[in-house]
Image 1 (spheres, rainbow, N blue to C red):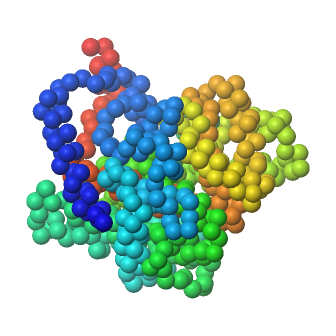
Image 2: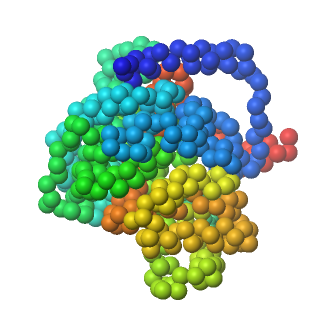
Image 3: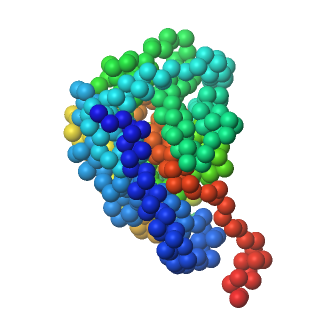
Length: 437
Ligand code: CMX
């Protein structure tokens, strides 16, 4: 079988050619206008960066190299004994644009399991953190420290040709992905289950299978399958979101993949981004407590208005780009509907009922451009049902997942020779002059 390295070697030249042609023939072609609203509005809608693996359509949601989420669920290989697509399958698709065979993904799983153990100094570092340090801070620090073994950094210091950058970047990215489960699980154990022995990686398991095992839930097949789906689905969401964009920006300085992704994780830690799933759970549990046994549409509606009138956002609803229910939300909901143990769960039922009411309320409220749920409206609540109730940890799982897309782009940025990112900013006075000119 063809390895991921050989597959990439094959697909890179065509993309390089495509870029070269665009550059030669269209460097000066205008593809859009910059409005004042873009400059003062967080660059929303401004088409200004290259990100090849996924494209987000406001109505349809995300497509990975042209494949929608239901397409991916159909064609991407599952783990032995499972039905859901794996992290390895999604990574292969993102990196190469091709659908891998089961054999190819299994080889990748074996490679990840073989090199996924943490260096001793890193275990000691993570063990030295106080349990009160936010798990995302721990994850970002751990990922940064893994750059101790960066092949890219070492090769750059030795002096390598630009055309070789991507190969060392790829090695770092694969090693980082391999080590993320052990790092993320160690953080979980230290903070929430101190003193419990962490098992070794199982050479026969896929990345997520091992992650769940190390977290201590290895015998829960349903949770393992949920996390396979969750981690594949959250893998990439275009390049402009805060975490992906951060990885790209930092990587463009030729910082190595570990440092680039460490920075991305700090962006993911914000409540308007990756922290939203924990906010949703907190909010849904507070609603559950207040409504008690009176969970009716009218009572949920009243609770939603109370949230909005107190000046808070409804967590899990709205999106910077999407204008319809997020297909990732739909995929997770369908996963729950297909399993009796989840269908009857009170928290999952509450998420469903909220979904039936919230879009109407948000439309009436009239502020958000998208009154529909994003993936965070359900993702954390399902984890809670499974007994993974430590919601400060949820963004760490998101962080394990987002590595798939963000690291893919670091490889491609090097393969395509993309330059240092450096947009031009303007002062208020300059902007004032520009609008008069
Ligand atoms: N509830 C109440 N008001 C909302 C809202 C919500 N869920 N979503 C947006 N609004 C408000 C905004 O706060 C903004 O109000 P102001 O004009 O007073 O500032 C107005 O509607 C317009 O915002 P928008 O253009 O529709 O949305 P943005 O692109 O600015 O923001 C997002 C997008 C996700 C930050 C926002 O919808 C939000 O805060 N949602 C709740 C938090 C959340 O679910 N985040 C997860 C996003 C997914 C992810 O990135 O992981």
